[in-house]
Structures are given as structure tokens and as C-alpha cells.
Image 1: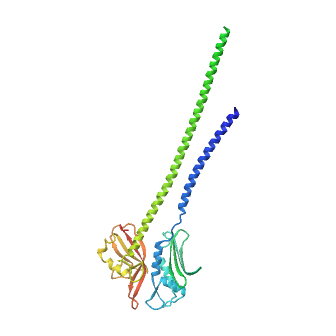
Image 2: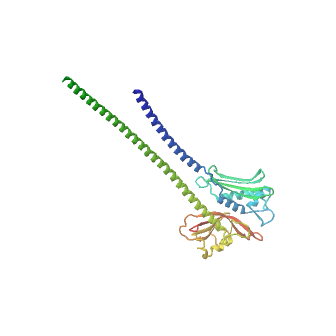
Image 3: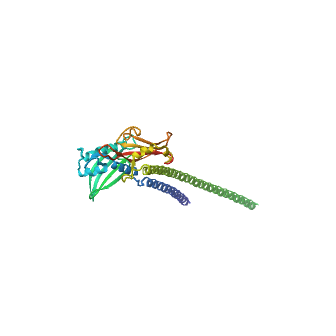
Length: 173
Length: 197
């Protein structure tokens, strides 16, 4: 009689445990599904290519500098100056094309994007390089502020003799 | 007589035993009923708790979804506004056609355009201006200080214009200073706001 009673109690306890485990499993599955959706949404690859940055780079490359290589008033724009800097040319005013390129690039970027800890933009990285096959040669690189956080960026290309000149700008916020 | 008495006692005893038995059975069934009720209550509680839990989870999930949708709607509207501003710089009234440049604005042409009042309602905008970013200069552009100026206001309604959308452009103009003259392009921004955006 006592054994039967004990068995009954044991069975009931087992049933309770199974019920409890079932509830825990259901709750865990719901949490996992919810968490999975949440993480997937967070990890969605952001489109970092910004039309605005590309537009800025296009305007940047169109900017006419005070550097003329052949004759005045055939002044080079920034796009041409990148190529001339790569070729090591010197302007008629005596300055090197790389010098003019660096000064103008720094000033343009400074005036276009106000960088600071309290500002929306935290930093930028501007790189211009020549790419031929698998080889790249850096022409100019300007870095300002903190660029470890999220960013938007853009690239422009112009053809050289055997390769391509690439200008890349990354704005961090 | 004694036998009859004994039988009566026996019957009474039997009745008593029966009564006690039925009482025990009744008590046992009541205990079982109570346990059953308790089980039903337990299940009901668990079901209610699960319903509340699922309700809360779905509520949080939909709240997040809605906020994401709202964010993407705002982003889309912003992108659309920027695209409209870019399109504006490519329109015939602004475009620099001397060279092949989709991003260039003819600054000379726009200066003349800003003087024409007939264009104020043309784009359905409350505010439209062009700002020179580099090289830096100061003042609102007019025929007297052009091109040594900073801002060229094309439409200025004076009222609260709301959110302003801007885009980088090249500001190209005829520079007649050195020798025979040449086209000089600078960096600027086109800023617009209003119902058309």
C-alpha cells in the first residue's frame, strides 16, 4: 500500500518536473527566436557608400588650384593635381604639385566637415592612391579626428597610363 | 430472543460500518476533487502567465519593428530630399554646360537668376541658396561684390522654412583676371527647403 502511494507521488513529481521543463523550454525558444531576430537586424550590412561623399569628391576633384604646369591660365584642378603629384611635376609658381595638393586638400576638408568631439562628425580619412594591377602607391593621406566608430564613405576613379587613380574619403561619426 | 438481539446488533454494526465506509469514500472523493481543482487552477495560472509573457514579448518586438520602420521612413525621406536637391543642380537653370560636368553649377547664370522674381514660385520651395565652401569668403552675393562673396540667395521667403537639405556642388564661373580668362570651379553647397523637397 505504502509502495503504491510512494510510486503515485513519484509519478506526480515527475509530471510536475516535465511540465516545468516544458515551460522553460518554450520560454527559452521564444527568447532565442526574439534574440536571433534582434541580432540579425543589428548585423544587417549597412550601405556605407554615400552619394553625398561621392558628390563631395567630384566637387573636390573639380576645384581649380593656383598651380599651372604648362602655361597660365591652364590651372590644374585637384583631380589633375593628384596625377601630377604622382608624376612629381612642379607648378610654374615654383611650388611642387604635391605641396599644393596637400595644402588645398587639408583646407577643403577642414572647411567642408567640421570635426570635433562634440560635433556630429568625429573624424575623416582621405586617401588618394594609384593602382596598377595588384600594386598600389599612396599619393596623399590626410587623417583627422577619431575614426574608430561608424562611418560613411565614397570613392572616385580616374584613369592613368596603365592603372587607375583612386580617391577615397571616409567620414566618421 | 437472544438470537434476534444478536442479529439486530450485527445489522446495526453493519449499517455503522457502511455509514463509515461511505463517509470515507465521500471524504476521499472530496480530497480528489480539491486536488483536481488545484490542478486546474495551476494550469490556468500557467496559461495566463504564458499569455502575459508572449504578449509582452510580442509587444516589445512590434515596438522595435515600428521604430525601425519609422527610422527607415525618415531616412528614405531624407534621401529623397537630397536626390531632389541634386536634381536641382542638374536643371537647365543651374547647369554649367561649357564642360561635361553633372555636378557643376554655373554661378554666373545663377546670379542673374537670383535677380528674377518670376522664379520664386517655380520650384515650390521656401528657401533656396548656394553657399561657397572653399575658398572662404564673406557676404551675401550681389552684382557689386560678386564673386568675392559667400552666399547667393535665390529664394528667401523669410518665414520658418523647416528642415534644410544640402548637397555638395562645383560652382563654376568665368574668371577674367589672368590673361585671356578661364573657367574656374570652386566648392559649394546647394541648400533647399520647402514643400517641393
